[in-house]
Length: 338
Image (cartoon, rainbow, N blue to C red; front, side, top):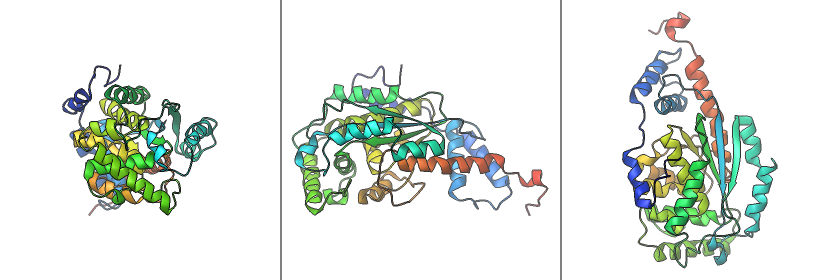
């Protein structure tokens, strides 16, 4: 059973916002008090202190721990590739999945270093979603099925969940979802993705403009069905399942963050347990983070996807908790705190 098992419509999924667990405010206060008692000036560790308090609130304990971490990379293919929006063929999605499975991708190395168990879930790669410039990407049933796949992949025993994506054409999907959620022109959200030239960038921009016009009535989770893909739906399902289990989530870059736009559009509380690992080189990501009121953990000029930035951020999160839990208080160290 998952949090989505009883949901038969997207409206029922949206209604979950009223029943999912919230942050433990008492644990967060206790963590803040501990931070202020450690042998340093209050606030001297900056964002590391914020991360420790965030983790305390969602784990429900003053001294949160990362005992184990899970990384999930979801892969899907997209009908919008028929519009020439990507310089690589869709066969590359399956080829990269095989590379993940054999341990040859960047995310494999980064997860190994960060101490996260990686799983890659390919979602009907032989059946691309519908071309969003012509109509909806998925039916409601297809969307719910992909969300359920994402929810089922979450390990209930982990301390933190990393999410990533793979899919030729999905930077176009991300731009369309961001525009549907927050408006603006297509050019505000479209970037070069895996290396589009100027002509390719124009095709992407035109595709996003047309897709959002064709699917103009989409709102809330309908944005996911109308403009998303199976990997975006799976990411949303994993986010909801993690929330039901009080597992903090680290989202990756532009595409992974944009995947959660329909959840935010349905109810912004759905993303309260989520961090964003890094700000991508994709030009729409910084704009999207502002719209979501999210502050990225890292800024390394990356644009790879795969969960790579989130995996790197996990190392910093571990460092934040090491300081939080391992440092002495002024009283323990016999140091005057003034």
